[in-house]
Length: 417
Image 1 (cartoon, rainbow, N blue to C red):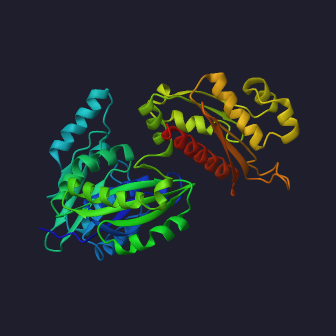
Image 2: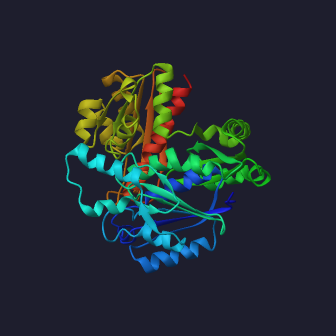
Image 3: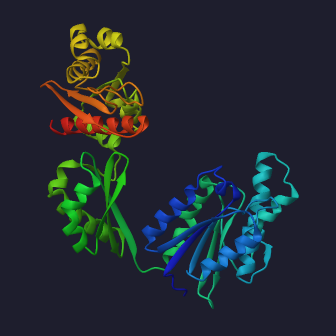
């Protein structure tokens, strides 16, 4: 049995190198390898050139026992992954009859004439393990070299083909090479910066070896990944659950909005659990908060609607913000944010009204009200809470951070019920 200590990923395709497509395959494979307990230290991308591809394969095999490749398995002349990898492993290609019959059936079912170059896809390295492709025409495969202790796995490039092939065929194949897995849970935090989180949790993070705790900074929030090295998922879940409980007892716990959930998902789930409804009134975010909420399945049961009130006449005419408030304090003010939140709650008839108003930039700021000044508010039957935000960055960054803080404020009000 080959012993896998380290793996590498090599994605093939000139279109990746020149930026025509984003390489999502490497990220997907990396996550799956981590879950399988397989270490990875290098990733690379190479164009459709046999000499460079051969060099990269041999270089990778000098460092690792498992090389996973994606792309270059198609019917065209520049699809050379199989030929090159087989040569590096001392194998020749031969027609794989079961794959050929499936390929013929694929074209017959669609009433399309199969061109001769398509047959190239079903010539596989001799003595390889073939992975059936139920979403496309190019099978994947694994070449094992027991003498050298090396394995090359080749997968099709399109993610819609690669991802199911990996989960359905490659993962079961790789499981036999490992006696453990890695099990991870993500603690999602908003309202506290990465440095502050680390400062509080550093003693715990440095002392914990299994499970480990590591911070990852996302845009506008922090994610703590708790990872256990374990025999199976049940053991890993318990180990991670115990660590999460310890973290939630610290000062960080007050800023945790969910485990393995996006912020908008946590909001929708919290509303649904209490049979409550929300509505939004947005100025500087232009509907972004509504968009994030409605991206969650089931949001139609708890989100009643939203009003994008860019112009003051919309704030006054539709939300009921008083002309006196707008004249005295301006559109970007705590007073206007409060009246917007109360107004949208009353107009739409929801349990909660959330509002945002601010200056996202890059223009429009003044010395008194600079770019990045934002007010958010959440109104319910008891009252209305208003918060001031002083944000930095690009227009889109400010808008995204604003939506994060608004959703977080809404979530805290929902959970107080």
